[in-house]
Picture 1: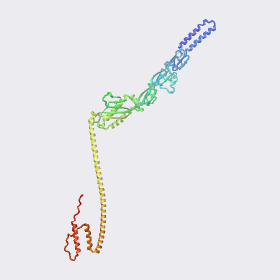
Picture 2: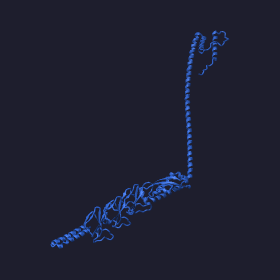
Picture 3: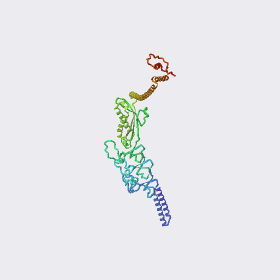
Picture 4: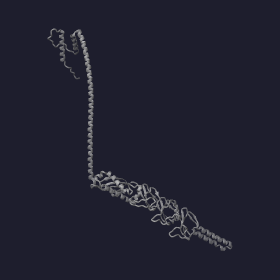
Length: 528
């Protein structure tokens, strides 16, 4: 396009000058010459303008000049002949005449979301000794370092791969200096940390006498501090990031019917040999995790948390279980499962802690099988059954003893009850006896009183009618009361001289009464 302007100007100028022979006046001829010069100059000047769009940049190459670039230098900073460090911004730019300057219009560099731009420079100072990547730029000069003229002068930029990267956005940078390669952003997922192996920075002064060397951030080597879950804009070539899972993991050592069904979290069962010569399999489950603060040790020792770590863990687990089994008898191993779990976990924790793995639990499942420990387990089962029977017998014996004690207690309680009843009965009898004694004494006293009264009455009667008549009256009372037969059945003879007839009669009556009293039978009570 610029050459067309010059060509058009030249043609127009020649056309104007072609009218000079036809013009006779000198002033008109001079005017035509001046007009031709103006047209050519205007077209020539117009040819020097270059336009750069809003999303473009202009790269300048100077073809004519008195100074050449120093050997090894690619971009001109001070106007030397060759590619220029300074680029053209959006807009019109004059004085860039064709042939003298070449202007290459290019689109801006765009870094899309989820990516970073890896920079490699074609010019600058040589990299420091033993350096693979140029040191990362400070944040306060980052934008200036993207300006080629500043990078190659005040910025003292290095030639070669740069540790600094371009984050998502659009950049107006000189493609003659900066080569940009796209790479995905470093994303640390949840339950994961990123361990950085830095190829950039100072080499730390570490005297390693044992163990694994880790370095602080900013130094060359494996950083001891991990990257936590989030996105990081890192040069994935300058900073090699290894993701390490911090989630709890379980690995099972078990016997499967088919090895085709074996998963990545399962290993073949562990076979051990006891002190008494039994060889038997043991199902084991090991739970472990990698803590964020120890993840760097895993990378330093194994490179990642994959197969190499798994082989180390498998080797430690099998060795520990085999060594522990050699120290006990098979039956003790079966019976002391919890002790074996605790001991194995302690030993495995010590072994794996050194390489950054934390063992959180060891569980023992099935121990042996019918083929390896069948007879031994049957013997143990019989012993347990016998022991249970002994316990049952002891419980029954204890129950019987307790029943005996209960019966004894109940008998003693019954005896005490009977004793109490008897005691009460004795007291009642004593009270009854006392009552009867009191009643008898009262009756005796009453009889005595009546007898005395009767005697006194009889005495009074006897004094009035005579003793014999008084007695006869009393006898008649008795005869009437008792229903005594008064016909005499007793013959009284041998009356003494001097006895009165009444005395004889009295004697006969008394005998009759006595006979009646003697012969009277007790009255029988007929049952109803």
